[in-house]
Image (cartoon, rainbow, N blue to C red):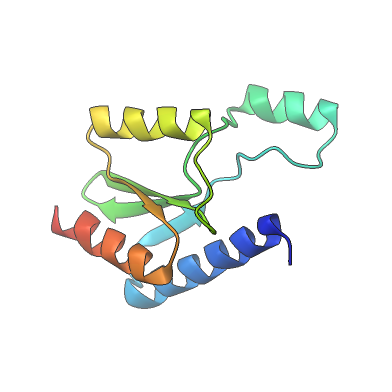
Length: 115
């Protein structure tokens, strides 16, 4: 499998586990990556608000709070845009976690719910 498919599979598994562990929470993927879309679609999506660097998953925690999980595999580095989004989250009080395993996803979720 290639890196993109491996990361997609990890995200699929992470979403499934979060939904299993916390069935009352809403978790969803934020489509923001470059891909095989054509130029017209990319321009349209950008105008619609698609932004590079936004975390892969948003978790609506209740009481007006959200948290973010960026999924990475194989010690892959964050992009410059992802680092900027992480900094934005930190400066504005949004929980942000970089996760490479389901164990890390569980720990991130526990921390988000404990804060």
